[in-house]
Length: 70
Image 1 (cartoon, rainbow, N blue to C red):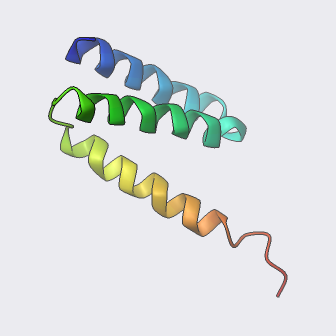
Image 2 (cartoon, rainbow, N blue to C red):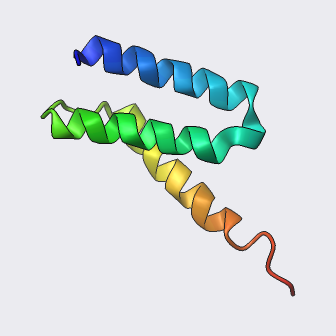
């Protein structure tokens, strides 16, 4: 798959995350798969996507404690 196709797929996933925040976790996994695919093909992952991936991981870690009783 060409870089531009992967980039377009990532853009669509980002749009869906904005439209369907309740499905964010499923869409985040799709995004991680696309980024992983870029890496496996030896493509350089744009820095903004790397920052986004880090932010998503941090958000997941933060969400893990949202339902913890205090």
